[in-house]
Length: 124
Image (tube, rainbow, N blue to C red; front, side):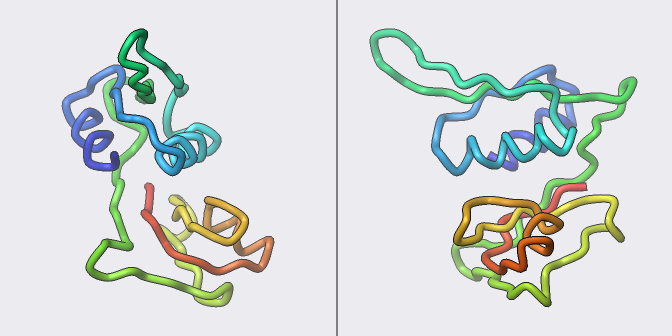
């Protein structure tokens, strides 16, 4: 999902379509709340019942709002942090998405709630 968004943003596509999953939808909602994407749509195709997430990317003029989208925790090396070691992304100009016991939240929200968890990705 992250690579599709990064690639579509690099070639200035208006939108990107991603196969549905709950975690992808939660990540997309966080990107929308933080103002990095225009809007998201949850679609379901007719007969095949294939669900998709359509993400409308946001641009400032001709430059994409998303400058970087890096996956931190990978299948070969998961990165778990406690509430004291939550990452700061670009001195607060970006954010990290953290999977906690209360769902996916940004690093700023996890710090407020005093939660730790798995760092999924960084967005700046």
